Image (cartoon, helix red, strand yellow):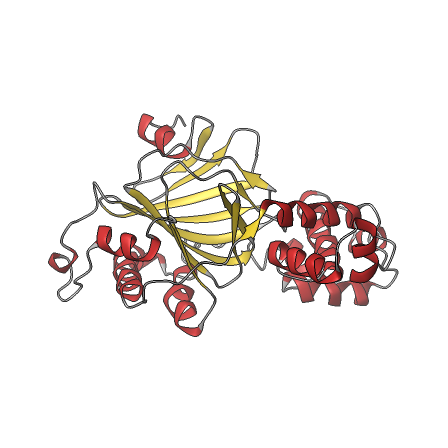
Length: 326
């Protein structure tokens, strides 16, 4: 299916339409196959809810010079890096971010190689000016809310909390029969929730040099997977202090170097389970496990299910609600 001109303007010239029906559209991008899937649901005029299911290292920056468009993003799994000028901001599991898409953002990077989450896109030109006309007492002015939280930086984030989990958790499991109405209620709830947050203090970011250092360490670890390298050993290798290396690596990847390399092995094993018919024991051996039960435990600790369950599709590798509502 050919994307419309509006879709190309919103997502870029390389957007592809995989599925389309009256309630949703599923997008991919040229050259990414099924590694980048966006499932979009219109909610109100100018307000769209989009599920991101990504197994890739990055997504190109989307064309959007109009600062009247903003996005509320929630990370369910994985990690995302957003770069603006000399600063990089990170979204970790459970975190929420609000960013104003004014053309100043670079490509979105996924340091762990995968990402699942939901985004609410707000086009202030088309979105309803009077939300209380939709639901009484929802007295939220979208432009004022964005200005209050983003200010000049164009970025606001709130770290994982029980309140954020409460707002977003139900969006990932919505029965098909009530989906359209439910999305409207949840978007209004989300905007009300954001309106209660105080104006932010300075947002934590990482410099390009810190991001570069973390990337150099990760590349080195990927080429030396057999060794058990400690942070002090890595710091000597790269000529920096152990505290700087640890701070930079955890800032970018959200975990220690040792935990990161374990996670990378299990995500690589998951890719083989998805894309090949090799046996679980054969895949386990490739990653240094000669015991299927030990491999299964390591896999479950990272992926959340056993290798056999993952391959059988018991846990769908998508955060979008199932179309049939199962």
